[in-house]
Amino acid sequence: MIGGPARAWLAELAWSPALGLRADVLIETSGDRITRVTPDIPSSELRVTRLPGLTMPGLANAHSHAFHRTMRGVTETARGTFWTWREHMYEVADRLDPDSYLALATAVYAEMALAGVSCVGEFHYLHHGQGGTPYTDPNEMGRALIEAARLAGIRITLLDTCYLSGGLAADGRQQPLEGTQLRFGDADAAAWAARVEALGPDSVGSLGPHARLGAAIHSVRAVSPAQMPEVAIWSHRYGAPLHAHVSEQVAENRACLAAYRATPAEVLAEAGALGPRSTAVHATHLTDSDIELLAGSRCHACMCPTTEANLADGIGPARALADEGSPLTLGSDSHAVIDLLEEARRVELGERLASQERGHFTAAELAAAASTVGHASLGWPDAGELAAGGLADFVTIALDSPRTAGAPRAAALESVIFAASAADVRNLVVGGREVVSGGRHVLVDDVARALGAGIGRLLG
Ligand SMILES: [Zn+2]
Image (cartoon, rainbow, N blue to C red; front, side, top):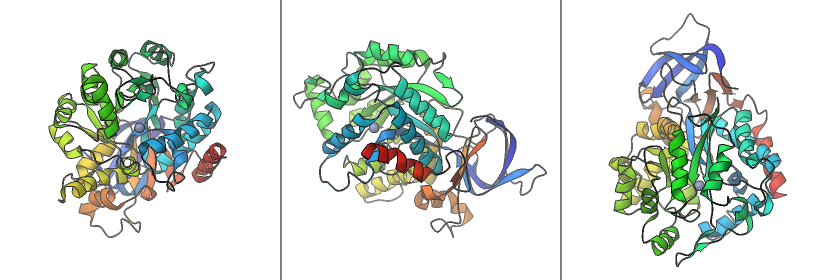
């Protein structure tokens, strides 16, 4: 799928961090790379594909659990908390096998492509068969996700997740894996590393043109401090991303303090798991010193505001983290919705609700979080810019939809970030090839139908 012929595209408007907002931008590509970006070219002698609207680097969905997409809607009828939601999630997880996961994830990643996502960070912990029995190939589920991304035309960083224990009790005791959780677990971090090695990464963690391998520590709930360094060391060997859920819930902090007399951020720091290739996912309930610790290491903070709202997690200190030095990224996580533009504006809107003041983040900062920074956090530093030499991954968002029409050209980026939705994505190019054209997926004929079939099979 990746690596198209030489092509030229003419964007009505284009934005990227390096380019700023420019009009009539000629983007030339060869194979999977951009060869030249030239603004102010209203017409060209080259045969160009016109891109009406605002073109920007492809969106990076830095935190995804593909199978959570099945729960959209069905968990909205009950009261409860994150913890009761999790019980529903386990029920779905228990029904998946490599075939049904391939079908479901292909449809979910196709939905992401329609929303302008060119790269997904899949936080993957559903490794084994029922009762924890490994498949003949113990990476069959991970390979299904990599294949799903290929079929949907997007890039993937498989964040293979170490998940060893069933949680921390309120008194801090480690609990064994039980029930569905048995499918998530490896014997220990060394067994996790051996399984991950069998995916066959090259020396820098690449699994092919569209796929990279990264590591994840599920959380302090699921990996003890003694096991964490092995995962961190594996990531350092490949220069690979290292992600972890951090302080999503107050109860997690409480149990962590009871067990280790340290916050989750402090436990991860002590284990050597924080640094510029790391991402703290959620980072919702942090102390001031946690913020200093994460940001001081230049660890990314992945905000998932629609999920955090949906699961009643709380509002994370995004501005404080960014001010102290943590680059921000965005994820749709549980896929309550898949719309990175909504994630982006909710970072600002959350700050407004918490502070009763406007204007914490610029649209450009939020757009960079949704694209450039997200790609860097997933190990694709050469994506996320409209510049010669970069990967030819870019999205075009309509400026003439009912949501975006009427905005002055100078406010096109603000209009897109604060008012556009996934439904306004018109074109997506990944690796120099069109994946979405005119709002239709080029590779997956009927995405809604594919979703319906993939989910229906699991919900019965
Ligand atoms: Zn998550």
